[in-house]
Length: 474
Image 1 (cartoon, helix red, strand yellow):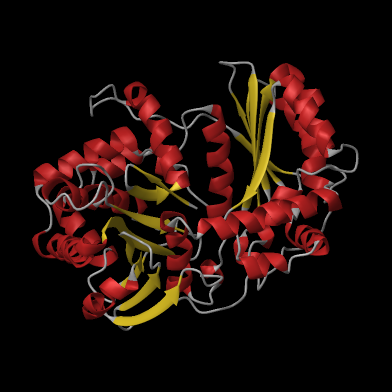
Image 2: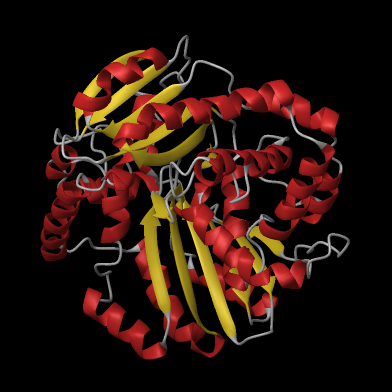
């Protein structure tokens, strides 16, 4: 999912990270690049008899406990019923073997506790927070949400109606749907092209039995992990978690991802999505990216910060500050386990469509031809050291990091040696990173706008195909 803030389209996860890091930048660096980098607190890792991986991190600053659990149950497992993973995750909160939906909500609300679960493209994640003194009251609810959801039929019907209405309304806001259009255009029939929320036609076909089948097939302890961070005694928590999930003995692997080749592009392509009443054009210019565990991840982030990842980036400077064509322009790398995508994104008034596209592509071209200066590299390093460290400051963020670490098989050095990795980036290495990971050609462009006014003008960018925004799907 992507969100638009001040004209800049970014993944929701990125925005959450930016907001959090803004709050604690002064703690990490206090405006001085020589300040020590944060070190990941010590934690314990072990595996339950049922195969579930557990992370325990003791932190006694506040009397709270934060939980993150991750499951191999993302939209890449939807097959032809796009939206199924998300629907299933939502349904796990509708009641369990021992608690109705109302009882769960009332008990959690009374205790001031929070529990939620949602699906993303690659996985589903459960999160919870509560006072450490309420552990024994909350744990039975958490255990059953994860291991014994009943998928109440009445709640299913109500939720399905709401979801279909939301999907219908979303096509009225191009900024809400341009990323699903891009993912589908870019990844095609590969599971990474699946829409997390689904489409009207795919959601209409989903039954309550589909939710139960998806849950049973993909919520498997052996491929899942849970992280508990906060105010507890590790030895007691280890015994309690072991006992809590002792009877969750679902064996085997989750559903295999469909074996479809990742995209390989031979030329520039354009998808023009016609919204005839549009007065603006939304656009994404994309190309193949990298996997999340790429060894050059930090260097790529530094260079992307300079190119399009901050307000003073080369891209935003050219499109917004110098030419006034938009309120925001940015670039990002979406990192998945097996593949990713690089994307530049912005919007402008319909009559400025070609001008802004020319400028965006021109900035990318100059990035390759002219590179960056030592001054710009230093600025990018200082910025990312203050703004883009991994998500590890609060207990909730640490719990999320530990489960992400499990899913993507990440090394703690990416945190503990973050400053060292950033500082080691030289101009020579930066040139290599730009050449290797930032696209030069074979661009994949998605536009949402008034086709009758821009169709002939945008054909110069590549092979053109068209869709109507009112047509179901992406």
